[in-house]
Image 1 (cartoon, rainbow, N blue to C red):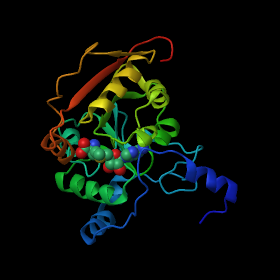
Image 2 (cartoon, rainbow, N blue to C red; image 1 turned 45 degrees about the vertical axis):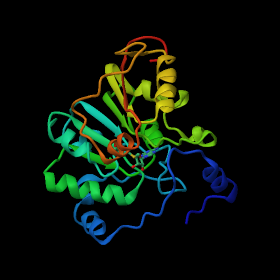
Image 3 (tube, rainbow, N blue to C red; image 1 turned 90 degrees about the vertical axis):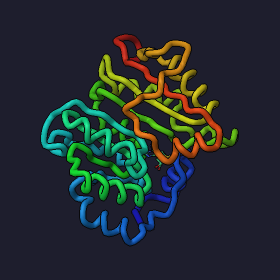
Image 4 (tube, protein in one colour; image 1 turned 90 degrees about the horizontal axis):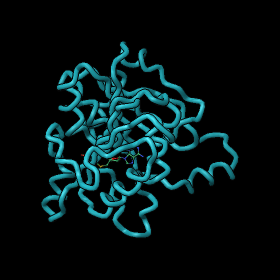
Length: 248
Ligand SMILES: C[S@@+](CC[C@H](N)C(=O)[O-])C[C@H]1O[C@@H](n2cnc3c(N)ncnc32)[C@H](O)[C@@H]1O
C-alpha cells in the first residue's frame, strides 16, 4: 500500500496500458530462479502506485548497471527471453536493457540468462512506456526491438496496442540518428497500424518503403511466432531508421 490519495490511485488504475495486470505468482522453479539470480540482472527502480509503474523522478545509472559503456539495445516485452537470450549471447559488444511487466516471465528469463552465461542483459520489470520516458536518455539507443507485442485483436481493445502514434513519437526521440527500430507481429491489421504510424513519424524512415522488411534472420522463432503461424497468420517484420530532422 502507498499513501497516495484515493483520487490519484484511481487515476493510475484507469490508465490504458498495453498489458493485462496479472497475478505475479511464480511457480516453484520460477521462484528459485528469481531468488538465485534476480540481483544479477534485475534493476530496481522506484515505482508509483502500481508495481509495473515507474516514478517520474527515477533515473538509471547505465554504466553502473552494465559495468561499462557500450551500444545500447532496448527490447520491449521479451517474455521468457526465448529470442532475447540467444540474441544477446551472440552480441557481447552491446548492452541490452529489457522491459518486461510479467514477473513470472522475468523469473524464467533470469534463470535462462544465468544458464546461458549471458551477462550483457539487464531487466526492468515495469512498463516499457514509462521506462523509455524516464530511464533511457534521448538519442541513446542503437536499436529498439518490439517483437510480437500483445495484439489486442478486438476493436474495443485497440487503444491498448503499444505501437500507436504517441508511443512512436516517444520512442523515436530515444533512438540515436542512424539507430534502428525492429518490429514484428503476426496480426496483419496491427502490422498495418504500425506501418501507418511509423511512416507518419517525422525523423523515422522505413528501410523498406511501402512494403515489409524480410524476416530478420537473427530473430529466433519463438512460441508466439509459432502459434501465429500454426493459426494461419503471416508474420510481418518492419525496420525503421532514425534520421536527423524534425521530431527526431
Ligand atoms: C506476446 S508476448 C511476446 C514475447 C516475446 N517478445 C516473443 O516474441 O516471444 C508480449 C510480452 O510483452 C509484455 N509486455 C506487454 N506490454 C508491455 C509493456 N508496456 N512493457 C513491458 N512489457 C510489456 C508482456 O508481458 C509479454 O511478455
